[in-house]
Image 1 (cartoon, rainbow, N blue to C red):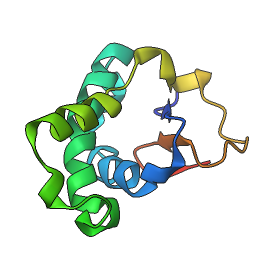
Image 2: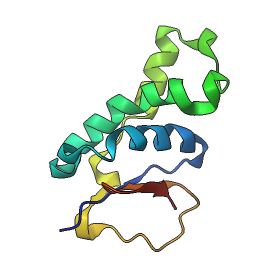
Image 3: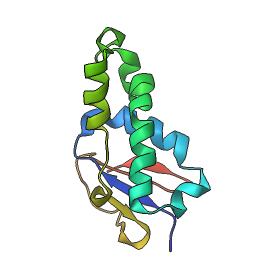
Image 4: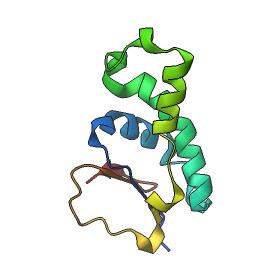
Length: 112
């Protein structure tokens, strides 16, 4: 089985967030041995931090909106469902999906 993960997120506005998260995770061998529920958990935890660090250099909504309500809303937005994750031979990376699907392998990552 090939080591590949695809996440169907459905919102290409957060391209920089996903690219940053995948940059941090794609070379971590453990990630490819996890089940979909575990992958969803790890990514969900990393995505909010990647959003703060990488999405328009904090200009997207700015740090002034980082109150508890906003933090919980955004963490909820980035919470991934295992049903939106494909692994191994389930992944076909030859279709166009308006940059709303993100994939990673040990050697590469991106969107389509």
